[in-house]
Amino acid sequence: MQYWIMGGGGIGQALAKACIARGEHVVLFSRTDPKLSQIHWLPVDNTDEQALAAATQDLPLPDRVINTLGMLQQGRQQPEKRLEQLSEAALLNSIHINTWPTLAMAQILATRLTRTQPLLFAALSARVGSISDNRGGGWYSYRISKAALNMALKTISIEWQRRFPAAMVVGLHPGTVDTPLSAPFSRGLPEGQLHTPSQAALNLLEVLDTRTLAHSGRIFAWDGKEIQP
Image 1 (tube, helix red, strand yellow):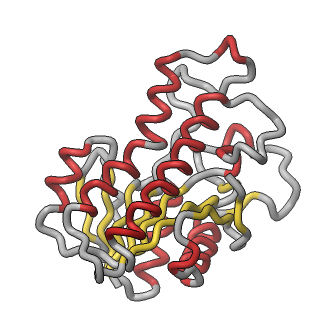
Image 2 (cartoon, rainbow, N blue to C red):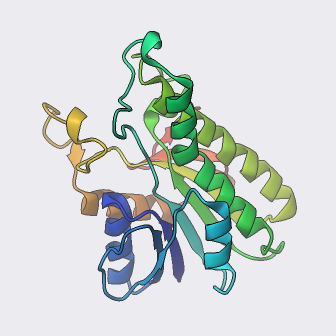
């Protein structure tokens, strides 16, 4: 089985290692060299659709694609606690990183898929992107960009059900993982709620292994439970 993994952060690298341990072939798309043996690394900015198209044009279609990109804070951009802290630049930057790469890769895949080509296309979402589950408020740019990602996945799944009925599209919530993204917000979590990247990778792969075409367009947490939009 061949995987395309977008993003070389903590979860992306852990997924690559877990797939390699299972004997899978992995192509990793990231800007920095993960220095992992037994993978095919392509130096790509995953937010650049032209670079992605160039990098994938000579590759055979994979069995599974997992987009692990995610940004909660970057430089001066921090999660907003109040509406007045939100800026257009921060919102657009969050959408550029958290939403757009999934759509860009889906566009590339759509030019090559056939009606009988099996494919599992997944992207890391977040529970805070659920509109119905939003009880805490705040984090405007992150929540909005992840909610937009969830809508993108749902809309892609509907179109592909007509055009590419053998393809499945799902969103994944990895839980709180011990990575730089969540480091500032993971202090004081109850024991067992902070997952290591390797644990998260195994959890996510187990979820993917147990999904079927009937699950397409839905969002699932690391434990397999569905998250409502």
